[in-house]
Amino acid sequence: MEVLATGRRREPLESLAANTGAEVLVCDLTVRSNLGGLLEKATSVDLLVCNAALPATGPLEDFSVDEIDRALDVNLRAPILLSRAAGPAMASRGGGHIVFMSSMGAKAVGPSLGVYASTKAALRALSMALRQDLHSVGVGVSVIFPGPIRDAGMWAEAGLPTPRGAGRSRTPEDVADAVVEAVARDRAEIDVASPAPRLGAVLAQLRPELFVALGRRAGADELGAKMTAALRENR
Ligand SMILES: NC(=O)c1ccc[n+]([C@@H]2O[C@H](COP(=O)([O-])OP(=O)(O)OC[C@H]3O[C@@H](n4cnc5c(N)ncnc54)[C@H](OP(=O)(O)O)[C@@H]3O)[C@@H](O)[C@H]2O)c1
Figure 1 (tube, rainbow, N blue to C red):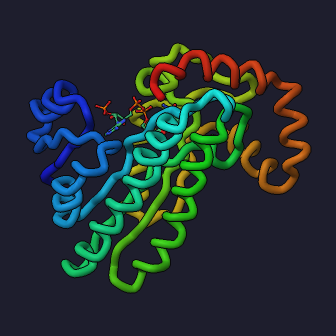
Figure 2: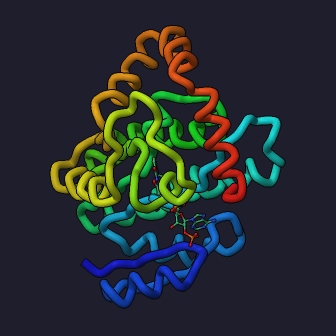
Figure 3: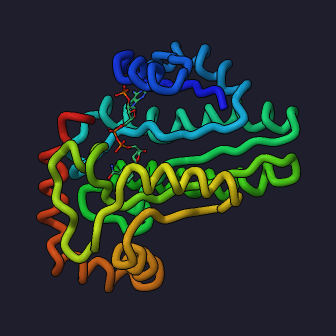
């Protein structure tokens, strides 16, 4: 495949390009007036992976309105606009696939995750709706739910520990494998997490009061505070 890689910082994109031959497009998803070029490019891709996100973590009253807007723009508005541009164009060429990067935090929401988890839960809804809207025109739509990822990314770079009871963390390669599997097998949803957080997600769905009570006992409040302190700068 020919790859188009996009983000705010040119340097990591250029090094990716050096290894893969990717085309690079520098674009800040919070600058609404600058999205035209990226949305135009989105009409020509056969596989769209909406991966960019801000780790908007902390109690709601800690956020400025600008910080909330930035999280909504990057984590949710951009995926909506990109898939709106890409989906019909894929359909006109006979098929394609869209992958959204959500988070286990959308299924088993902890304290201080209100803004982040709202955007990630919305991606699940978007994916499920588009999967049905675009089925008849040959476009697959999938959503991936990583738990804490070690070695690289927002969790690892913040130096956060694997939450108590969360089992073994997964790797960036595991996430990449999930994206490939989602496309190859047209999977609706894939969790990239050990059994414990996956069970937590089921519990949160079936017995939310119990999930919250157990989470409190397992130290969810302290973890939320640690995440807030570690990730505040990246809002
Ligand atoms: N790491 C984890 O443990 C974990 C767990 C669950 C879900 N996830 C999800 O996995 C995805 C990747 O996360 P990560 O851990 O790799 O995070 P990361 O290291 O912070 O990377 C975030 C990516 O988003 C891009 N980005 C951020 N703000 C942007 C903006 N305004 N405009 C354009 N691009 C922007 C960044 O590129 P620039 O900085 O160059 O803009 C970077 O490529 C996210 O959707 C995240 O929510 C991660």
